[in-house]
Image 1 (tube, rainbow, N blue to C red):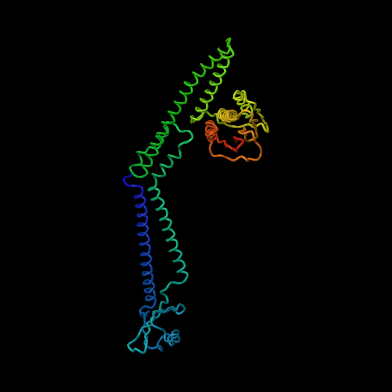
Image 2 (cartoon, rainbow, N blue to C red; image 1 turned 180 degrees about the vertical axis):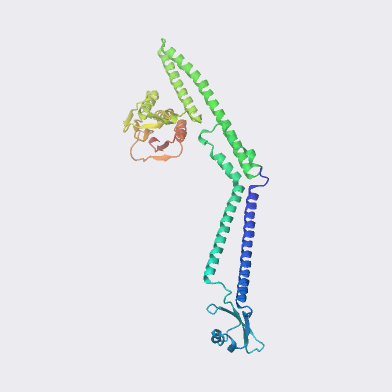
Length: 410
């Protein structure tokens, strides 16, 4: 469709506007000059017709000051320098030139009475010229807009095609809306082709991601369900104390595996069927996380202090929030050694604080500082950070020599 590059088309459009406007303005000025000439000649003929058959001369020469019209004699006696002078009141134009006698000057007087237009005519002429100039300016502006629009039309067309895409819900066929083939081989065509190929790759990735998460969800959850069922059957059997401990470890490992699978699937999904608008309570999820991971404190003399300062409700993804809370609670339980309690869980209106001691000398001498990384406190905190970014929450880790404080805000 377009054989030339966008840069050449814009330059050509600008050049065409300049050329057309220059030609139009040139004709306008030429017409104004010819109109002025014709106007002067017509006025001269009209004056001659009025005095016919005795024709008066508008141009006259004078060698003597005494011969000048009376209105110019006093001025001529001041010995004016050579040049041209205009007397509006007398309607005279005077040229002072040297005469044959070098000590004297000559005067050429042009009587423009009846030739020059009246002031009212000048104002009307000025108004007409202003109107013509304004009209030409408007036409030039309109022409420029039309030409530039045609020059940048491919860019506008591409921008509209991109703007119509719903980037939050891309489908596998959205890349076909670009239609890069219609833009030719110029810069816009290259940009359109790049966008089309990028969207095609993204769409293919989304398809693969959905297929993978659906398949992985089924393939990973099925063996976990089988193992969980087998454990339940074993728990109903007559087991020795040693076997009971082994089955209990198996049950906890299966629970951790199930939590890990849910966690990674939650991070992998591009969409989650509107679960981000679910209303849920925070306290039940916190209690469930404590109960699930209480076994980590088995054999440790550590107290758990829970402070319910509010009963917050959140609109969001309850499963993602539960995964985040489970990771915070598990890390606190795992990294608190025997006798280094208590573990404090504080629930506020817009945040959850989990504090665990890493030294038996916990007091107010060491103000906590924010750290940029969760290294050393468990892989789960990095996952919590990603979940918070995905759901619009805020996560921070504060640590000092004796305590670690994790804050989850919403």
